[in-house]
Length: 286
Image (cartoon, rainbow, N blue to C red; front, side, top):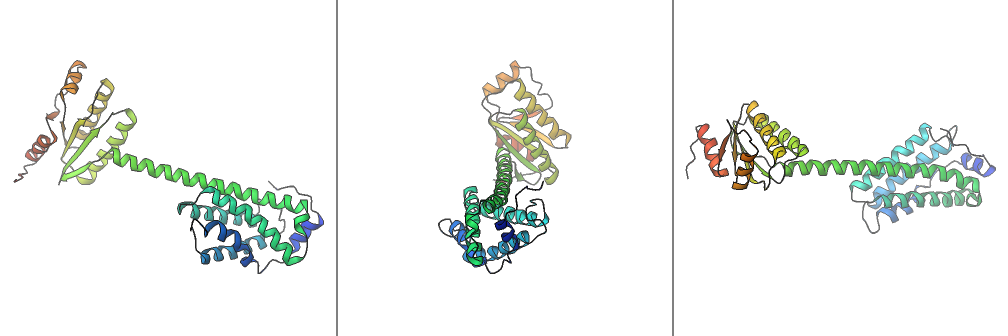
Protein backbone atom coordinates (compact mmCIF):
# COMPACT_ATOMS: atom_id res chain seq x y z
CA UNK A 1 0.00 0.00 0.00
CA UNK A 2 1.33 3.44 -0.91
CA UNK A 3 0.93 6.12 1.73
CA UNK A 4 -1.10 9.02 0.37
CA UNK A 5 0.54 12.28 1.36
CA UNK A 6 -0.03 15.78 0.02
CA UNK A 7 3.35 16.81 -1.35
CA UNK A 8 3.86 20.32 -0.02
CA UNK A 9 6.77 22.55 -0.96
CA UNK A 10 8.56 21.67 2.27
CA UNK A 11 8.15 17.94 1.66
CA UNK A 12 9.42 18.37 -1.89
CA UNK A 13 12.40 20.24 -0.50
CA UNK A 14 12.99 17.37 1.92
CA UNK A 15 13.01 14.86 -0.94
CA UNK A 16 15.39 17.02 -2.96
CA UNK A 17 18.03 17.21 -0.23
CA UNK A 18 21.39 15.63 -0.92
CA UNK A 19 21.96 13.97 2.42
CA UNK A 20 25.55 13.43 3.48
CA UNK A 21 27.82 13.84 6.49
CA UNK A 22 25.03 13.68 9.08
CA UNK A 23 25.96 10.33 10.66
CA UNK A 24 27.85 11.98 13.52
CA UNK A 25 24.78 14.07 14.35
CA UNK A 26 22.56 10.97 14.25
CA UNK A 27 24.71 9.25 16.88
CA UNK A 28 23.22 11.25 19.78
CA UNK A 29 19.99 9.25 20.23
CA UNK A 30 21.90 5.98 19.87
CA UNK A 31 24.47 6.97 22.49
CA UNK A 32 21.73 8.02 24.89
CA UNK A 33 19.59 4.91 24.33
CA UNK A 34 22.27 2.23 24.19
CA UNK A 35 25.48 3.53 25.78
CA UNK A 36 24.45 5.46 28.87
CA UNK A 37 22.92 3.36 31.63
CA UNK A 38 22.26 -0.01 30.03
CA UNK A 39 25.63 -0.39 28.24
CA UNK A 40 24.08 -2.38 25.40
CA UNK A 41 26.60 -1.09 22.85
CA UNK A 42 29.84 0.82 22.67
CA UNK A 43 30.36 4.14 20.91
CA UNK A 44 32.04 2.59 17.88
CA UNK A 45 29.06 0.32 17.28
CA UNK A 46 26.65 3.26 17.47
CA UNK A 47 28.86 5.22 15.07
CA UNK A 48 28.84 2.33 12.60
CA UNK A 49 25.09 1.88 12.48
CA UNK A 50 24.54 5.66 12.38
CA UNK A 51 26.47 5.73 9.10
CA UNK A 52 24.23 2.96 7.83
CA UNK A 53 21.12 4.89 8.87
CA UNK A 54 22.38 7.96 7.00
CA UNK A 55 22.80 5.89 3.85
CA UNK A 56 19.38 4.26 4.18
CA UNK A 57 17.57 7.56 4.76
CA UNK A 58 19.38 9.16 1.84
CA UNK A 59 18.30 6.26 -0.39
CA UNK A 60 14.68 6.54 0.72
CA UNK A 61 14.39 10.31 0.32
CA UNK A 62 16.17 10.16 -3.02
CA UNK A 63 14.08 7.28 -4.36
CA UNK A 64 11.51 7.54 -7.13
CA UNK A 65 8.63 7.71 -4.62
CA UNK A 66 9.73 8.34 -1.02
CA UNK A 67 6.11 8.13 0.14
CA UNK A 68 5.86 4.49 -0.97
CA UNK A 69 6.39 2.53 2.21
CA UNK A 70 6.43 -0.71 0.21
CA UNK A 71 9.45 0.34 -1.82
CA UNK A 72 12.75 -1.56 -1.75
CA UNK A 73 14.38 1.49 -0.16
CA UNK A 74 11.95 1.53 2.75
CA UNK A 75 12.12 -2.25 3.09
CA UNK A 76 15.88 -1.92 3.55
CA UNK A 77 15.24 0.42 6.48
CA UNK A 78 12.74 -2.05 7.94
CA UNK A 79 15.29 -4.85 7.73
CA UNK A 80 17.89 -2.65 9.42
CA UNK A 81 15.55 -1.75 12.30
CA UNK A 82 14.48 -5.37 12.68
CA UNK A 83 18.09 -6.50 12.96
CA UNK A 84 18.97 -3.66 15.34
CA UNK A 85 15.97 -4.53 17.52
CA UNK A 86 17.02 -8.19 17.73
CA UNK A 87 20.56 -7.11 18.63
CA UNK A 88 19.31 -4.89 21.45
CA UNK A 89 16.85 -7.47 22.79
CA UNK A 90 19.25 -10.43 22.86
CA UNK A 91 21.72 -8.28 24.81
CA UNK A 92 19.18 -7.72 27.54
CA UNK A 93 17.65 -4.51 26.25
CA UNK A 94 13.94 -3.78 26.35
CA UNK A 95 11.43 -2.85 23.71
CA UNK A 96 11.17 0.56 25.38
CA UNK A 97 14.84 1.19 24.51
CA UNK A 98 14.15 0.71 20.81
CA UNK A 99 10.89 2.68 20.81
CA UNK A 100 12.54 5.63 22.57
CA UNK A 101 15.48 5.45 20.19
CA UNK A 102 13.23 5.39 17.12
CA UNK A 103 11.23 8.43 18.23
CA UNK A 104 14.38 10.30 19.27
CA UNK A 105 15.96 9.52 15.90
CA UNK A 106 12.96 11.07 14.13
CA UNK A 107 13.27 14.30 16.12
CA UNK A 108 17.04 14.40 15.68
CA UNK A 109 16.73 13.81 11.94
CA UNK A 110 14.43 16.81 11.50
CA UNK A 111 16.73 19.02 13.57
CA UNK A 112 19.82 17.92 11.63
CA UNK A 113 18.24 18.33 8.19
CA UNK A 114 16.86 21.72 9.19
CA UNK A 115 20.28 22.83 10.39
CA UNK A 116 22.11 21.53 7.32
CA UNK A 117 19.69 22.96 4.77
CA UNK A 118 18.46 26.10 6.47
CA UNK A 119 14.89 25.05 5.64
CA UNK A 120 12.52 25.10 8.68
CA UNK A 121 11.23 21.55 8.29
CA UNK A 122 10.13 21.44 11.94
CA UNK A 123 7.49 24.09 11.20
CA UNK A 124 5.92 22.03 8.41
CA UNK A 125 2.98 19.85 9.39
CA UNK A 126 3.31 17.93 6.12
CA UNK A 127 6.92 17.02 6.89
CA UNK A 128 5.96 15.85 10.36
CA UNK A 129 3.10 13.78 8.95
CA UNK A 130 5.40 12.16 6.41
CA UNK A 131 8.07 11.31 8.97
CA UNK A 132 5.40 10.14 11.43
CA UNK A 133 4.23 7.64 8.81
CA UNK A 134 7.79 6.46 8.22
CA UNK A 135 8.81 6.13 11.85
CA UNK A 136 5.49 4.69 13.02
CA UNK A 137 6.02 1.88 10.53
CA UNK A 138 9.50 1.37 11.96
CA UNK A 139 8.07 1.17 15.47
CA UNK A 140 5.79 -1.60 14.22
CA UNK A 141 8.92 -3.39 12.99
CA UNK A 142 10.39 -2.99 16.48
CA UNK A 143 7.28 -4.56 18.02
CA UNK A 144 7.48 -7.40 15.51
CA UNK A 145 11.08 -8.09 16.50
CA UNK A 146 10.07 -8.03 20.16
CA UNK A 147 7.34 -10.62 19.55
CA UNK A 148 9.77 -12.84 17.63
CA UNK A 149 12.34 -12.67 20.42
CA UNK A 150 9.68 -13.37 23.05
CA UNK A 151 8.58 -16.44 21.09
CA UNK A 152 12.19 -17.63 20.86
CA UNK A 153 12.60 -17.11 24.60
CA UNK A 154 9.41 -19.04 25.35
CA UNK A 155 10.50 -21.90 23.11
CA UNK A 156 13.90 -22.00 24.82
CA UNK A 157 12.24 -22.02 28.24
CA UNK A 158 9.90 -24.79 27.18
CA UNK A 159 12.84 -26.83 25.89
CA UNK A 160 14.62 -26.29 29.21
CA UNK A 161 11.50 -27.35 31.11
CA UNK A 162 11.25 -30.47 28.97
CA UNK A 163 14.82 -31.35 29.84
CA UNK A 164 14.32 -30.80 33.56
CA UNK A 165 11.01 -32.66 33.43
CA UNK A 166 12.74 -35.69 31.91
CA UNK A 167 16.02 -36.16 33.80
CA UNK A 168 17.13 -39.25 31.89
CA UNK A 169 20.59 -40.42 32.90
CA UNK A 170 22.81 -43.12 31.45
CA UNK A 171 23.99 -44.67 34.70
CA UNK A 172 25.99 -47.35 32.89
CA UNK A 173 26.62 -48.30 29.29
CA UNK A 174 23.23 -49.42 28.03
CA UNK A 175 21.39 -48.64 31.30
CA UNK A 176 19.15 -45.57 31.62
CA UNK A 177 17.37 -44.24 34.69
CA UNK A 178 14.23 -42.11 34.64
CA UNK A 179 12.96 -40.78 37.98
CA UNK A 180 9.35 -39.65 37.52
CA UNK A 181 8.29 -36.85 39.86
CA UNK A 182 4.84 -35.35 40.16
CA UNK A 183 1.86 -36.15 37.97
CA UNK A 184 1.86 -37.80 34.56
CA UNK A 185 -0.77 -36.09 32.45
CA UNK A 186 -1.20 -36.68 28.73
CA UNK A 187 1.05 -33.85 27.53
CA UNK A 188 3.83 -34.65 29.99
CA UNK A 189 3.64 -38.34 29.16
CA UNK A 190 4.18 -37.57 25.49
CA UNK A 191 7.18 -35.36 26.29
CA UNK A 192 8.73 -37.92 28.63
CA UNK A 193 8.07 -40.78 26.24
CA UNK A 194 9.54 -38.93 23.27
CA UNK A 195 12.66 -37.99 25.22
CA UNK A 196 13.04 -41.50 26.62
CA UNK A 197 12.64 -43.28 23.29
CA UNK A 198 15.11 -40.90 21.66
CA UNK A 199 17.65 -41.63 24.40
CA UNK A 200 17.10 -45.39 24.05
CA UNK A 201 17.81 -45.13 20.33
CA UNK A 202 20.77 -42.79 20.82
CA UNK A 203 22.45 -44.76 23.62
CA UNK A 204 21.38 -48.23 22.42
CA UNK A 205 19.98 -48.80 25.89
CA UNK A 206 19.18 -52.37 26.87
CA UNK A 207 17.50 -51.54 30.19
CA UNK A 208 15.52 -48.62 31.57
CA UNK A 209 14.85 -48.18 35.29
CA UNK A 210 11.74 -46.03 35.78
CA UNK A 211 11.47 -44.87 39.38
CA UNK A 212 8.07 -43.82 40.79
CA UNK A 213 9.25 -42.72 44.22
CA UNK A 214 8.32 -39.12 43.42
CA UNK A 215 4.79 -39.98 42.24
CA UNK A 216 2.47 -39.23 45.15
CA UNK A 217 -0.91 -40.01 43.63
CA UNK A 218 -2.05 -42.26 40.84
CA UNK A 219 -5.36 -42.77 39.06
CA UNK A 220 -6.50 -44.78 36.07
CA UNK A 221 -5.30 -42.16 33.60
CA UNK A 222 -1.84 -41.89 35.16
CA UNK A 223 -1.63 -45.68 35.31
CA UNK A 224 -2.54 -45.91 31.64
CA UNK A 225 0.18 -43.40 30.77
CA UNK A 226 2.70 -45.37 32.79
CA UNK A 227 1.79 -48.60 31.01
CA UNK A 228 2.09 -46.78 27.68
CA UNK A 229 5.65 -45.77 28.50
CA UNK A 230 6.61 -49.26 29.64
CA UNK A 231 5.19 -50.84 26.48
CA UNK A 232 6.97 -48.28 24.30
CA UNK A 233 10.28 -49.08 26.01
CA UNK A 234 9.70 -52.79 25.41
CA UNK A 235 8.87 -52.18 21.74
CA UNK A 236 12.25 -50.45 21.42
CA UNK A 237 13.91 -53.68 22.51
CA UNK A 238 14.81 -52.49 26.01
CA UNK A 239 13.88 -54.06 29.30
CA UNK A 240 11.70 -51.82 31.49
CA UNK A 241 12.08 -52.05 35.26
CA UNK A 242 9.64 -50.08 37.42
CA UNK A 243 10.80 -49.18 40.91
CA UNK A 244 9.70 -47.13 43.90
CA UNK A 245 6.05 -48.23 44.01
CA UNK A 246 5.14 -47.26 47.57
CA UNK A 247 2.13 -48.79 49.40
CA UNK A 248 -0.39 -46.10 48.43
CA UNK A 249 0.47 -46.49 44.75
CA UNK A 250 0.38 -50.29 45.01
CA UNK A 251 -3.10 -50.23 46.58
CA UNK A 252 -4.32 -47.81 43.93
CA UNK A 253 -2.99 -50.00 41.11
CA UNK A 254 -4.68 -53.08 42.58
CA UNK A 255 -8.00 -51.28 43.01
CA UNK A 256 -7.82 -50.05 39.42
CA UNK A 257 -7.15 -53.58 38.12
CA UNK A 258 -4.05 -52.38 36.28
CA UNK A 259 -2.33 -55.27 34.51
CA UNK A 260 1.34 -55.32 35.48
CA UNK A 261 1.96 -58.76 34.03
CA UNK A 262 5.24 -59.00 32.14
CA UNK A 263 6.47 -55.82 33.84
CA UNK A 264 9.44 -56.17 36.16
CA UNK A 265 9.09 -54.25 39.44
CA UNK A 266 11.55 -53.72 42.25
CA UNK A 267 11.29 -51.90 45.58
CA UNK A 268 13.95 -49.25 45.02
CA UNK A 269 16.04 -47.79 42.25
CA UNK A 270 19.09 -49.53 43.70
CA UNK A 271 17.29 -52.87 43.39
CA UNK A 272 16.19 -51.93 39.89
CA UNK A 273 19.77 -51.19 38.87
CA UNK A 274 20.90 -54.52 40.28
CA UNK A 275 18.22 -56.21 38.18
CA UNK A 276 19.30 -54.29 35.08
CA UNK A 277 22.97 -55.15 35.63
CA UNK A 278 22.09 -58.79 36.25
CA UNK A 279 20.09 -59.05 33.03
CA UNK A 280 23.00 -57.55 31.11
CA UNK A 281 25.55 -59.80 32.77
CA UNK A 282 27.28 -56.87 34.45
CA UNK A 283 29.05 -57.43 37.73
CA UNK A 284 29.57 -54.33 39.84
CA UNK A 285 32.14 -54.64 42.61
CA UNK A 286 31.70 -52.58 45.78
